[in-house]
Length: 285
Ligand code: ATP
Image (tube, rainbow, N blue to C red):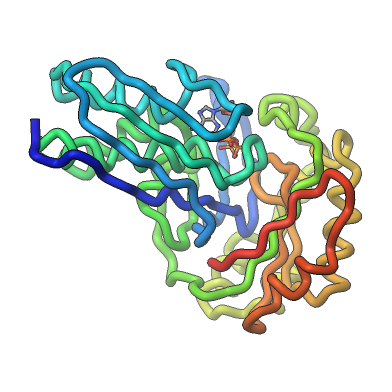
C-alpha cells in the first residue's frame, strides 16, 4: 500500500444543458444526445486506506452505505481490477441533493475510481480502461471523470469535450418530490417527443450565446417528469421571471436550473425564492 493516510477529493455535480432521447437500445439503455455541464457544487469524498474491506459512512440518511452505494461499488471495482484486497474507508459529505438529476452518486463513484490508485500506491489505469470501468458503474460516471462541458452521446458515455462554459451563475431549485429515473423514462412517449436541435444548441454553447441557448435548450424528459412533479413548470416560470437566460430541468429531474451571466445573480435570486419543500442552491458552472 502507499504512504498516504488520507485523500480528500471534490465530486462535482452535473446538469444537462439539453437532453434528447433518440431511442431505446436492445440492452434496455436509452440512446441519448445531451450536453453535460459540471458545477462548483460538489460532494466531498474522503478516503483512508484500510488493511482490508470497504466501509462507507455518510452524513446523509437518504442513501444506503452498503454495496448499493455507488462509491462502495467503485471501490469494489478497484479491488477487482487491481487484484488486491487493500481496503478503504470512505467518508461521503453529501451536498448534491439526492435523486435530483444532478448525478450525485455518479460523481462520488468517479471520485473514488480516480483516487484509489494513488491512495493504494498503485499505477494509474490507462484512460480507456478507466473509462470502461466508469461506464459499467453508470452512464453518467464517464462524464464525471471528465468534467467541464461535454456533449454525450451513446448512453451518455461517448463524450466530446466542448469549450468549457465557466463562471456562469447557476440557481438550482428542487421541489420536495424525488423522481425515479426508471419511472420518468417509462412515461416517455416516443411519439410525442419534440427533439431539441442539438447541433444548434452545441453551436450556441461554443459561442457562449446564452440567449440562443435559452431559446433552443430542451429536455425531453421534462414532459413525463412534469406529470409527476407539476411544480417543475412553476419553478421554470419563476426562474425566467427572475432573469434567467436559460431555465430547464436537469437529467430525469425534478431539479430545475436557471443560468445567467450577471455576477451575483444566483445568490440574489435565491434569497427571494422560497416555498415549503423547495431546496434552493446558488452555485456556478
Ligand atoms: P442520475 O441523474 O444519475 O440518474 P440522480 O442525480 O437523480 O441520478 P443520485 O443522487 O445519484 O440521483 O441518486 C440516485 C439513487 O442512487 C438514490 O436513490 C440513492 O439511494 C442511490 N445512491 C447510491 N449511491 C449513492 C451516492 N453515493 N450518492 C447518492 N445517491 C446514491
